[in-house]
Image 1 (cartoon, helix red, strand yellow):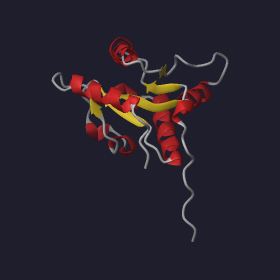
Image 2 (cartoon, helix red, strand yellow):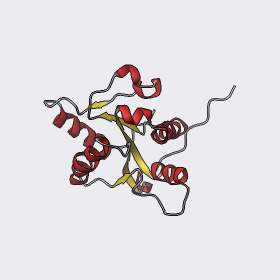
Image 3 (cartoon, one colour):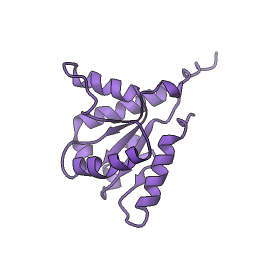
Image 4 (cartoon, helix red, strand yellow):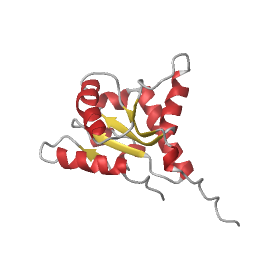
Length: 157
């Protein structure tokens, strides 16, 4: 029996974006993404693609999502109760995890900015270390960890 095929090499300089942000475009998620998360990531000099904001007009939405995620080194999923109930965000996080499996990399970075029942998380999300931006004393440290993860190399298996 031959060994499994080696995942394709990833050339990080070929990524158009450092991060793709997957979130549900509802309140309070949208305000937090645009007023808190995005400015902090931009301040760190990161190249950011935001779900719904980098889509090419006239192209099917799912194709645009796939292109945005494929062109991004990492994908942040902004977890909330509304996120977990949304079909499009489910497609986004399943797609990025599938790409990671195919490449042998860890592209998904879940974060939470509001309390969420851990029992509501599907296994595919609960098994990934989540950055907790809810706690007021830990939020700054977690933001720093987030920026470091996005600036660093893509973790590989």
